[in-house]
Image 1 (cartoon, one colour):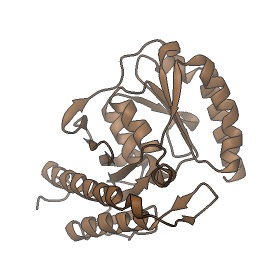
Image 2 (cartoon, one colour):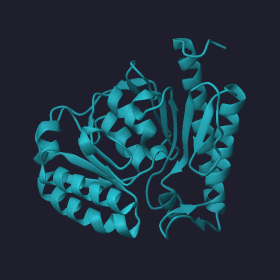
Image 3 (cartoon, helix red, strand yellow):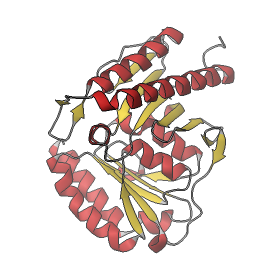
Image 4 (cartoon, helix red, strand yellow):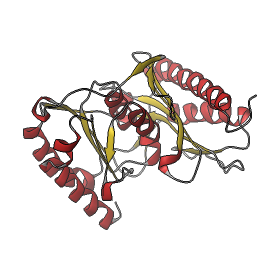
Length: 279
């Protein structure tokens, strides 16, 4: 195996993450029809099933076998502390409500963080099990969909833009997002609400032109943020920095209009309110 930190090491890690994400996706598709129960976590719309847990175990075991010194942060608690300074961030099933209800897309998300901040993301994989698409990126090498390079939209008119919307469906977040959605709808061509990782992946390949993501967790957005950056998407947020609390994102030609729009102002206000309440 290549030395840690080398380009070959990152490509080896990337290939493993792609393989594990696809294996977890196959498990999810296979098990979907047989799910009979799930558990509520933080609130009534925050769900977990045995498939979430099995998917995380599959991914974490695969990563730990190949990179035993790396840390792992898993949404469902499957994490371990590492010694290498690198950390894998895993959301085994982003969009569990969609998965359980057969009401929309979901994805498998794996990111590698090689440093202490969200800016130190080294690689990312977002896999859509239903359509079989795999988005991936290595820092400095661009974003790809099934191995083919992708870039952000070339849209320049905000009124024609497709905007992605992702947020935690807790009661507090939904109430604060009312103003964001009300401001966003008149300003853009249309909106789509999908899970966070696919929202950012769709920005990376130009399917969406801009997006607001609010009240998420790091495992929801880590892989998607690197994909978007590598594709040329502009990212901002509270104090100008994207974070799980708030990500404002847009294609380069839309960023100025989008970042100064009423929707962006409402989103910044909502995120500040959420942060103030601890939600």
